[in-house]
Image (cartoon, rainbow, N blue to C red; front, top):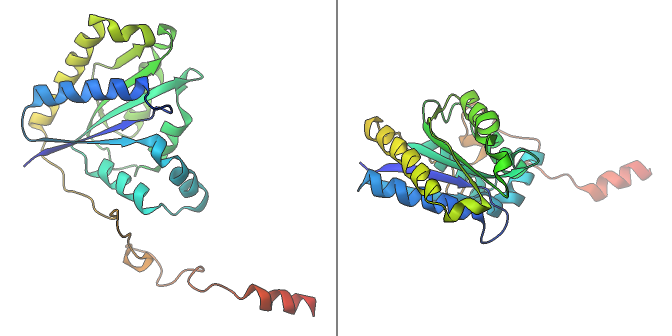
Length: 218
């Protein structure tokens, strides 16, 4: 049975150094893990509008729901964020906030970050590691940080390979998780299909606003 890795990348530009680092980590994991590894990359920037809407309404779009299902189904996670104001980006955190709090229990997570300067190199330790530890994930010992000048450095390649090796070894001993499929790209679940949901909601019937306004006028 193939192992599923989900890579969350939260770069805002296109192309971005964050996606470049993500791709290098994914390639190293695939090389070291061998056959039977399935990788899905989630570009958080493409879900920005969906994330905002969900935070405001409590209802995820079909596309966002499918992404959250992918995270909940993952046998391992790669999480890569740009550094904004000395921490992970707001968009990255907003997406993680929507992940079910039990979804990452004991899931191996490789954390990584990018920034314009090496002054932010500890962001993986004081921001990302505590975040995923709170979610009870198995955060791997080696984190990857890449400043702009690091991409041409062999030291970054060695660190990527070391972190990817830890993830590959963690995958080798993990039992594949069941796939969560609450949503698909075509259809989402009806409210009544969600366990514990009421048979109807206040939104089932749209009021006649013209009639309501007419009553108020009288």
